[in-house]
View 1 (tube, rainbow, N blue to C red):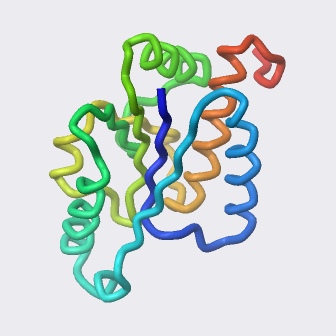
View 2 (cartoon, one colour):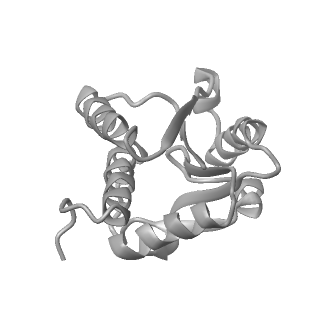
View 3 (cartoon, rainbow, N blue to C red):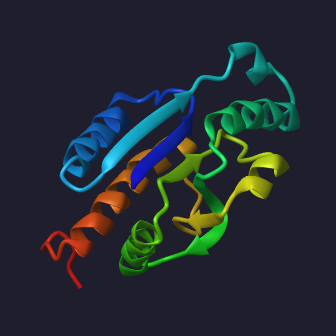
Length: 157
């Protein structure tokens, strides 16, 4: 199963890029990971929140295949423990899904079209984080999930 991570715009802070890179390298031992960055034209950022989400949705939907299992990282999504998340990953691997796509939206979240296309909404916390920081937090949790599945000592419980 290919794990694809789609993010809107480049990560701006070098410390976040460095952290994502660390987990990306570690994940090579467990899965094939593809990171796609969708660059939104700067003039779109001058528009209303709704217009920005609509433009982002067009770009996101172009990246998706009909067979993709799309998981939105969304503040209103279902919250899982790290163990539950590892079981979620295992279940998707066992189900024969070819590409499991995790999507982090832009600063205002997702347009309705993206919510309608989603197969699952995953919440990382009831706290609010910037969409840039969520990238690092999610990569760490993905790595943790695979180490749990591998019976490694990274996760303590």
